[in-house]
Amino acid sequence: MGVKSHLHGKSGGVAAISTLNWEPDWLAVVWGDGAASRYPAIWLRDNLPEGRHSGNGQRLFDISALPEEIALGDARLTDNGDVGLRFEPEGLDGVFTAVWLHDHRLEPEPEPHQRRLWDKTHRPHEADFTAISRVPEALRDWLTAIRDEGVALLRGVPTQPGIIFEVVALFGYVRETNYGRLFDVVSEPEPVNLAYSSLGLGLHTDNPYRDPVPGLQLLHCLVADSDGGESVVVDGFAVAERLRAEAPENFELLTRHPVPFAFISKDADLRARNPLIELDAAGEVAAIRYNNRSAAALDLPPAVLPDFYRAYRRFGRMLHDPDFAVTFRLAPGDLFVVDNRRVLHGRKGFSGGRRHLQGCYADKDSLESRIRILETGA
Ligand code: NM2
Ligand code: OGA
Ligand code: ZN
Image (cartoon, rainbow, N blue to C red; front, side):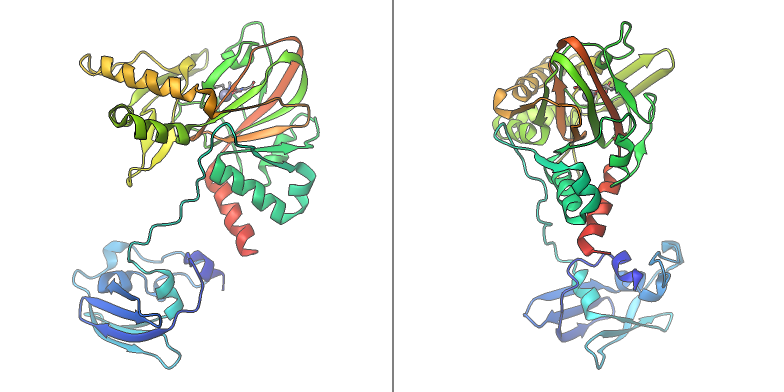
């Protein structure tokens, strides 16, 4: 029972098989709707249900334990429409349900894009702390906005120091760093980091000098008695896509050359090297790293640097184009979350009275896990 979800079912929908064909190397299935699927024998052998623990669904054997040459010796439709297979040379029998085979079709079918790119017209999703603490659907919607839009606001978070931990506990775990499990963003006389001053902070992602970078940042406002200090957020993915469309050669340069970032203090010497725009294996933008304060001296080959600077500056100008900026002012009891691999944030300088935020980092995998759990109602 628990196993089904562990086996990553996509649809769970009803799947009827109309015809089975097989060769020693392949199983071919024709579905009730006429679509066809093929599965290699080695893949089927690797995924036999018996190969997994019946309680938790974890695989029980290592890939090296599989015989070198695996072939199907027989394939038949069972009375209830599932698929019985025999594997040689082991002489092993196993059954796959039609639903499992349908959920795990291997034909390339692009996953629908979850991310929604946005510009200055975007109104970040807002939720109420009490509501998301009590109503699973409200929590699901708030977390989904963070996952798909990279930013969301929360109101009504008591101005009690440390309450940010209760927000994180709704979806995951704090990612502790040299700044602590929690950090106080207040203006200090000798700030170890410019965030702890009253200066404005240009658009940035946090901690690019760390690998991996924290996936999420939460900032909770306890006191906002000063003038200024407004928050700004920009969808780095939207800007990167604009750059790709308008200046593909600039985009390419920023994805191809990793650049050094550093943060050095009395008790930290953090360094990491990564591209400003990171792509995944499919060429999709996977992460933005942009932080003027902690960018180390660029050390790319001299022949590359002039072109690289052109691309870097163009990207920087685009990021600061007001067409992309969403500005808001945090009041006591407000909190916002950003996807720190996607959305840049900044603040205007402030003066006059006191301003106090508490922040922490968390990882995104737990947030995505929580959404799946809330969606299946488990
Ligand atoms: N603080 C607020 O990444 C950065 O250096 C931005 C981070 C100090 C944890 C500031
Ligand atoms: C930070 C930061 C913004 C603010 O702490 O990383 O960007 O509004 N702070 O003080
Ligand atoms: Zn920051």
